[in-house]
Length: 87
Image (tube, rainbow, N blue to C red):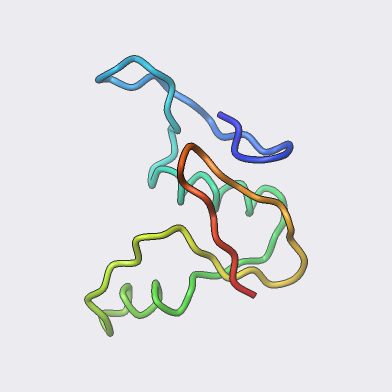
């Protein structure tokens, strides 16, 4: 499955529809983070995600957002999901 320019994610057929879907553990978020790691981009979770994981907040982050350290200007998307970047 194409995620962006020169970036692809592993696909597997859906058990329900038989259509190809991302085979990453956490769906699009997991596939996009794996792609960033493979591209050698330094990233970290956002403050909202860290607060939820540490138990300081009960709001679940709904959108795929990562904080990028350094230069990265590609767009990663799959269907209606787009990876948002914070600087």
